Length: 407
Picture 1 (cartoon, rainbow, N blue to C red):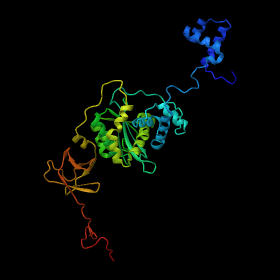
Picture 2: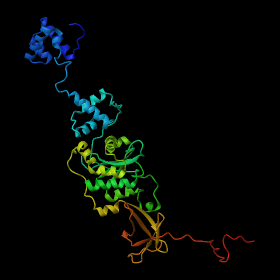
Picture 3: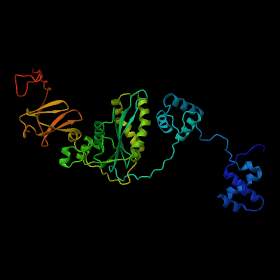
């Protein structure tokens, strides 16, 4: 036979052993033991080698299409549909979307087809040395929390923030989107987690001022021996949740990798659904998208004991997730906060006196509460007092205006 004959390493090894059998150096039984073949298989292979030479060692199906090969018509239909609707999708996500339309095929088959036609280029990442940290053993033992700033609605739309919470032990996630990474967004996301799973033991966050602060303590905090905390930190303290600040993004890799999943799958799903508003995106998150991610990527914990504690009632959570400031009571029993004025009513018991400190609490829905000695006060919001008109008189010479110049 003329030309070159391609042989695998296994076939070349058989050729060496069979040559020794032909020359009388080995028996078929000895060669079968060295090749890891049964005696009958080795005898058949050697017979074919004697009759056909080296060609008899080559697998008979080499160069022929596989019996399990997909029909060419299916391949063309899949590639056309991919280009029409799923261009830019990775093989795994594209496979799932195509299966929903009735095009059922394996991930590697689709990946091979896409690479063959230049529709997908594998991305290789350089390996970086990291010390592996074992997952926590219990659900609710540690929950990682972080915001992902991304152009979720396309390159032409402004970036917005998706706040994501991921359980370290299981990978279960809860997510919510807003325009910016704010304290309000962090509180509302944690609220969703509490209502769904309960109170976790600890949160693992970065060092952004939404979660932790490095400011100096105020005089009131120094007198009370309290550490400076953000409004989110105060809410977590009321709930008994410890906040652990990570020193690097890699330290909270669980939630960082989940950001990548959302930036891939959620962006594509928003495009497929024609969604370009944050309100509609949140509806999609809550109405099945996050649940589908949890079913696909979450895993059972090593220990089945759930460390979540029961969550407070909805009414209690409204007053836990809030913004509080301390203000003094004026001589006319008014309180000013954020340029708004509140008149404390006389029928309160106990009634604060002028100079006393009250807490002004603003809930997430904008509701204002005044508290004195941990009791809510009755009050009315009043209009801003009018600024004094005219020039004030001299403090000890009433007939002389302060702006007048004596000669």
